[in-house]
Image 1 (cartoon, rainbow, N blue to C red):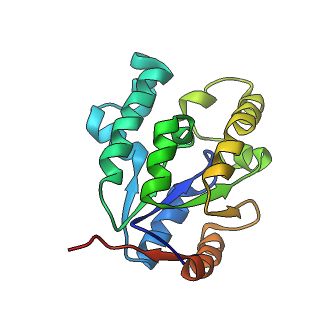
Image 2 (image 1 turned 135 degrees about the vertical axis):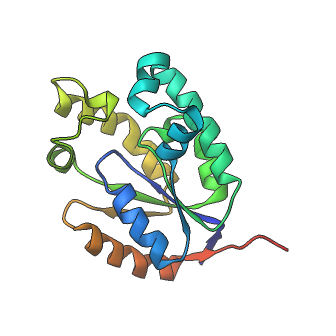
Length: 180
């Protein structure tokens, strides 16, 4: 068993972190935290607006602050944004404060799942497939390095992926509650 105070989902956009995360949080009676929503709430602006006004660098600063805030808690399932692993400090905090599940997805499945999505700033370009391939090339090694457990979500519905993860997590993760 690998005890940790939080369950943290990492992986690229379209992997199912939010959908699967909500289901897992309910199953394990954890508070579901969508890091992107925390960023929006803290900043008072949408993610596309933050990218437009502050660029990716400014957005990543908001992300870093939100992650530190959230990871101070316990008993949570935290769904991170795909780029949260780019910052070494974020990776260190994630590893220290959670059992990390990498939801892996192929570029082909991402293209299918994100075909109608207009809210992701990094995909607002005509060369979406190339963008996703480039992101995977740079981020996949970071996801792999950080992961305690990996699940390829390509072939599963959210319900099926959740079922697989429940079994694996029951065998490998123990919720660590704070010392009173």
